[in-house]
Amino acid sequence: MEFLITIIVAIVGGKIGLKLKIPAGAMIGSMVLVSIFNLFSGKAIMPQEYKVLTQIATGVFIGARIEKKDILGLREVLKPAILIVSCMALMNFILGYILYKNSSLDLATALFSTAPGGMMDMTLIAHELNADSAKVVMFQLIRLISVIGVIPIFLKKIIRKKEEAEVVKTYEKSKSDKKNSLENIILTIVVGIVIGYIGYLSKVPAGALSFSMIGVGIFNIFLNRGVMPIPLRQLIQMFGGALIGTKVSLKDVLEMGQLLHLVVIVIIGFLFMNIIIGLIVYKSSNFNIATSLFSAAPGGVSDISIIASEMGADTPKVAIIQLMRLVSIVSFYPILIQIIVKIIK
Image 1 (cartoon, rainbow, N blue to C red):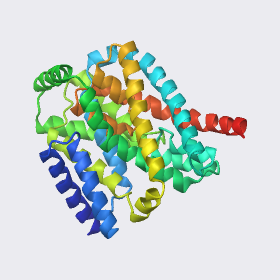
Image 2 (cartoon, rainbow, N blue to C red):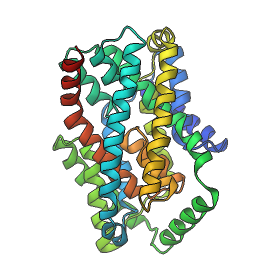
Image 3 (cartoon, one colour):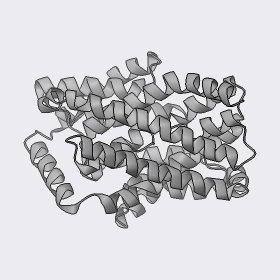
Image 4 (cartoon, rainbow, N blue to C red):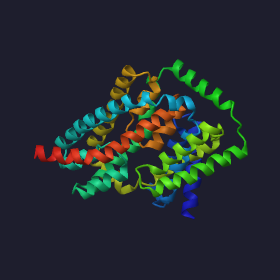
């Protein structure tokens, strides 16, 4: 019953967000209303299985947009990806050090709190390395919420209207040539679920998303039948927002209220980091401004990919770079943190 109520609240919130024309309104509206519901009742529930389904569905959505020209342009992604991962690691170490110097947090906890990896991944690794995992998960949650709820609003002001209109227009034209039939929709979803579940079982970071994206992408490249209807995409956003909203508790709000000045530092730091790195990528590559900014956004792969698609970005490129960032951060960041902690101590 509580799960059903959470779903209803998420859909209502998403519809309100869409009605108010908020950037990524379906996701943000759902996240906000479910958070409020959870704060007052403590009964918002979204089983862990829905995180996997949301990742698979997001992968299907991205994969359905991948065409032959995107594969031919993969070489364009490597240089920006290396640049983004390197700059992001450097700026996050700086942000973590600022947090360390201005709080009672130990250095390891501060660095993990500002790590741009997956919230669950960073929290579990922090626990293994004897950092304060409770503080890490709170700051990671703040990062996730700010990236989804705050950063898109600022990025929208930066993205040039003319370029955004041209990208959206091109995309709509390419999609209009496809047969938006029930058969194609079912085939696309089945391919995504089967391949995505294999990715989930593989234990690869964000495997459900990356495998379903690749599977549906190959399906679309060879058969040109990949389809993801807009209403279904919006439903995915609502589920994604609900998943985040259920993590917000009264205890988190009260504890973070005591660290309000640090929360502000982290949010502003992530915003400036996103803009600076995004502009560097924009100036040093042939990415448009939307693709550059969202490729450098330190959020979840699925969340950023969905939001980017609404603002004129090249979603496949954004998703690939975000996946490369996630894998790199999870693989190398803990090692670098251990080295830095030893040096500074």
